[in-house]
Length: 469
Ligand code: SAM
Image (cartoon, rainbow, N blue to C red; front, side):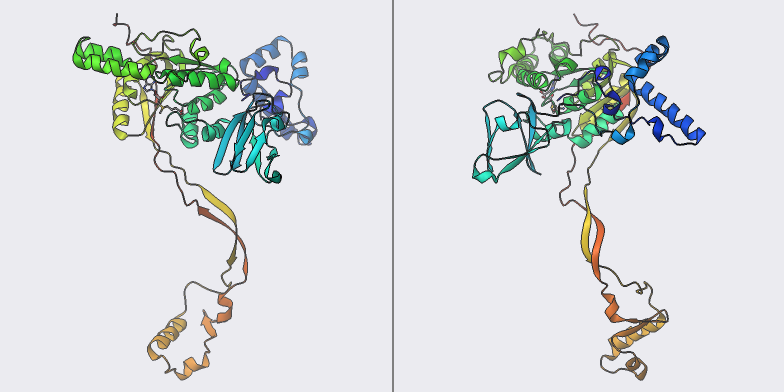
């Protein structure tokens, strides 16, 4: 993934920002329209480049900026979306492999490696140098098997990544990003890291100069996450901390007394978790200036250091006092919990720690097929409400069976009067034609979690660890 590029140095930046500036030649003759478009262009530039742009613009009396911020010709506009990324696959690049709509896989394009599936063998050498999005044919099976090679996005990565834990899926992830108001260059804290699915979503939003501090107490997951972030070109945007943010050891020791049986038992359990499954972790992934978990909990970034905090933990309420200390005044927090009991405890902790404007939501996805279907159209002369005459005729038919009245005999089975107009029963079946319809997917993803959002108060909060020795 390549969304950590420094945007201000990217050539063609205006196109890549997805902000469309209107070229002078398209402004038209109306003086008011022209004025509005020029002002909108200026606002778009300021919005995208932020204060740096405005300051340098004022300083240089705009001569140099005109050079770097040339308006683009809309007719040549090359549609590009963030994140910007390489067009061609390079050696060791992450590639999402589309096998079918329900089967996404991934590979790192490694010279001389082979990717195999039920459709055949695919040589990585054939991937390298090809554009993302291309179709690759198998070397065997007479080339009948094929794959599409896709450029990774957080959404595609979430669908193909190796699951080490439950992950946050796209619907929840988009709600979280939106309501945490995560935007470029923010500092965000997250715990736990788990499989890194939510981390990738956050990273795309905080690029190019933000920082994600993600905390995980399982050593194996820490190592794997670090390796993946580096491999995806995101290492400069993220720091993975090996740490228990809840400080459970300390809490239990304080509650039960360090020597009590329960305290010791729980501590042993936590040690097992912290050191679990280290065998398949590459030591290089763990040697990165390993910080020592002092057992106190918290994010160790100091007071008011994070713009937003995301918690996906079994006991988020224990992390809330630490979050209150680390978050900036008026910053946003979100806790993701599958159970209402967890949510209730978290909301109570948030209230106690100065958060306000709590809102808990459950997002459910309902997808539709919207497509053209062959259908019979209703007759144009069929009216909803039958006349009295038509109703009595129908009654006579039901009661009389074969004993038809003279009047009814006048009306053949094929003829019926509706609101005074004669209509032939033949016209009940309209001609069949294609109609645009919408129908919901048969499978609907059900409950994932309750998302609780809140805003930090505007006063600084004390460090819960301050009283600990
Ligand atoms: N949000 C992640 C994703 O989208 O991939 C999944 C997170 S997973 C459900 C929860 C993670 O939190 C687990 O990996 C677990 O080891 C970690 N965890 C649980 N308690 C923790 C704590 N007190 N401190 C740090 N990590 C913790």
